[in-house]
Image (cartoon, rainbow, N blue to C red; front, side, top):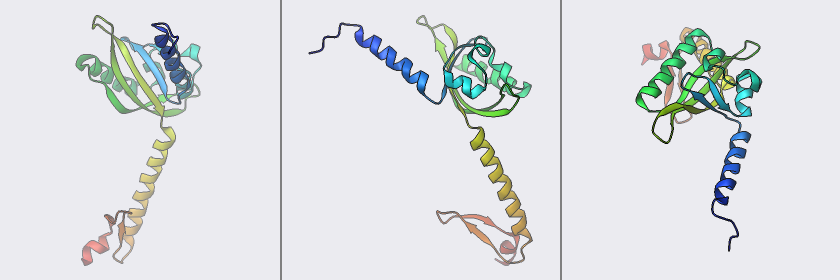
Length: 175
């Protein structure tokens, strides 16, 4: 038999929830309706590249260039108006040293118990390395494609699944 009192489970669950949020690699954040940070975990500090005291109560747009800030405003405005959250949104931010970081964000609307819209909540992940790798791969594929087009012999490249991923011009001309 459990010796827990009613409500003890809620305290334990709340502590576990807080420990989980504080220790995950992803940044967890909450913004007020004006776009200012009202809550975030330590991972969000690492992701943004700023100490906690330089993030608290600052507008999300402070960390973005004008173009990304405009896209951010439009995204949160859409969430506010439709009530539908977003996932896998890519945004560029600048850390304290001015380096561009690419974040993948999700966001949803927060409502109070009365159903009133009071802010936004979401998760952020730094995908800068992944993004840069994908960009480098695209560049390499483009260069390789250009090189293959100069080869006078028919060439074809297959994926691991056996699908054709590239044909050079000589292949097209011959076949």
